[in-house]
Length: 300
Image 1 (cartoon, rainbow, N blue to C red):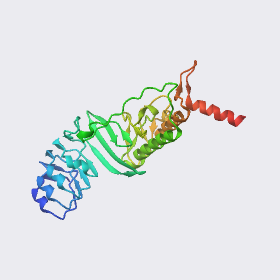
Image 2: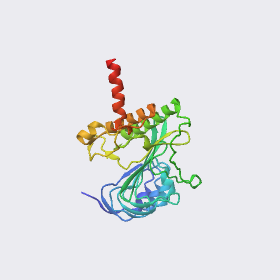
Image 3: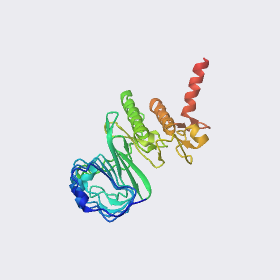
Image 4: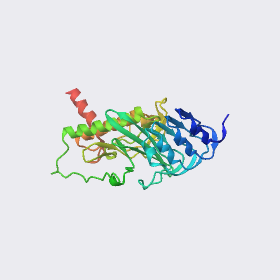
């Protein structure tokens, strides 16, 4: 049974209310501005209803609010700036605008904030024109946007290929890149719910900032997977030389799919060679080359 009707402004008189769960109903109308008077409120869940209108700016006054769920309603207009400071929020499935700090229409935004491996992580999931986009500041980045006008947009430019006389990355820097990428994948696999399988982990999708911190990007092939599942059956996608053999054989993508791609990236990072060698008559995978070396070591 679903509740119908509208939200009463008198709910705003409940000064000691800490949690309000009215999700998965058929509530219509707008969100009363009086909800901004719920000084003790920590969780507000109004998702999966038929709410319309704009999000009242008064919600930004709720200093104790930790979780805000407004997904899958008919809300429109600009998201109040202060709501971006809430540790966890979900606006997915609404036609909302992120505000003047963004130059993109945010059809949906999801943010989780916390600490993982001593990194402060902020994950934004957005649906723009039907495509899913991700931004994990400091670790994972696809759309590099910032609300602060003074910072404008973070931009990661393509670095030209190194010339023979150019210095290569030292081992400490390579280690930093490897660890940064591993932490990103660990966050996507272990800390996100649903977990995220990238499906195209490779060196070309790991960008470096001015401090050589790894920024994993390009989530065009990413899949969201329920935490209870170990894999998901999909069409085989990825980059030649980085696709796990098990994925090709079964069509089932899992965290191991990303780990295989990460392993190939490590080989590239250590050897300085591409995943596929196009020299000679036959293409040779870097992995096969390493296997041959290990084979001859074992024999001789």
